[in-house]
Image (cartoon, rainbow, N blue to C red; front, top):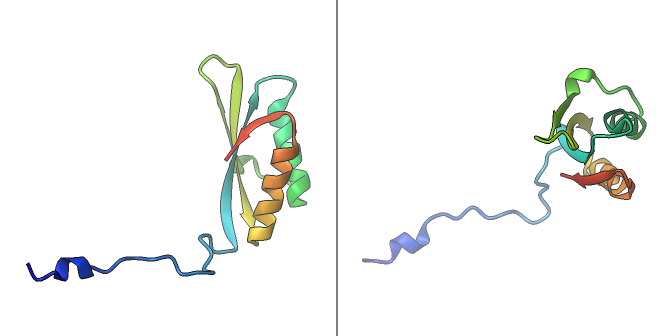
Length: 101
């Protein structure tokens, strides 16, 4: 062996290059208990955060097997990483939201 196999090209992340290119459509997944209008709460929250109505086609709901929890996937058009981080910070502050991705 001549050692050339160790010289295989390796893809490395370029420092400072964002992993997400903006503007983009980004999907947030929000999970909470299926009670007291949680789905409507999440829709209203995103309406407020985005400053506009969220299209019903941009939201999907999936109840848990036992129907105790509900997962909502909300796809929105983001302009910047700052906007994405602001939304995550707000999701983190909401007591009704048990988990988010």
